[in-house]
Amino acid sequence: MKKLEKLYEGKAKILYETDDSDLLIQYFKDEATAFDGKKRGLIENKGILNNRMSSRLFECLEENGIETHFVGHISDREMAVKRLEIIPVEVVARNVVAGSLAKRMGMEEGVPLKKPVLELYYKSDELGDPMINEYHIDAFGLARRDEVETMKEKALLINKFLVDFFEKRGIVLVDFKLEFGRHKGKVLLGDEITPDGCRLWNKITGEKMDKDRFRRDLGKVEESYQEVCSRVLS
Ligand code: UDP
Image 1 (cartoon, rainbow, N blue to C red):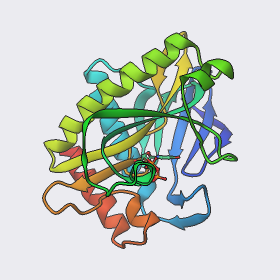
Image 2 (cartoon, helix red, strand yellow):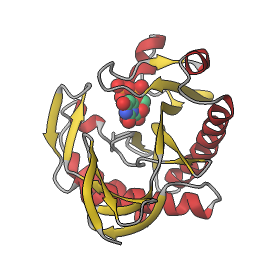
Image 3 (cartoon, rainbow, N blue to C red):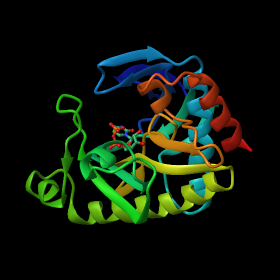
């Protein structure tokens, strides 16, 4: 497979065309942003670590019957993925109160939820990804009903799998964001699963091991990504 021109450059990744029209190369950068791009920085080696973690997690999901866009690990910062038509709806799954949910509900972070919560957001950088519901998705034609049902079902299955996966490695999966896309009539998981888009807390010490260390200037950012990576690969 030959790498061709750049198709799209996002905040943390670049997508390249390849000589196979069904496949793209997803390249992971070290750049980190937070608060809708207002805070910017570099997390040394993040691209390499995120590529490793995402590759492993996508492989595990595939082994468990959950289809993703992942095709294969190519190099330190590159993976081959299926070309998706991204559905502009981000799905957040939550197990413990944190972040925007803590604010919205006026609660302390850290309260376990009685059951997982799914939230839907309109994928729009300019608007800062506003929260939407299924009425908005229907009314604005963002996705078909059956696609939304598939995304919700898959998000809950992925959550169940990941909670258990991280639990076994001494990590609490607090919440995370997923993106899906269409490929040959199917809805597949796309994007990445990394500490950039997940809240991961050390089960014993409660220490944050994810991008909140960067967002909130807590230090030891690269070390935390390293630690999560070595546990994910173990
Ligand atoms: N998240 C993300 N991208 C976004 C918004 C949220 O990856 O544009 C992830 C975030 O890392 C966290 C989860 O989704 O794991 C829930 O985020 P929340 O709504 O609490 O927003 P935040 O407090 O991160 O702004």
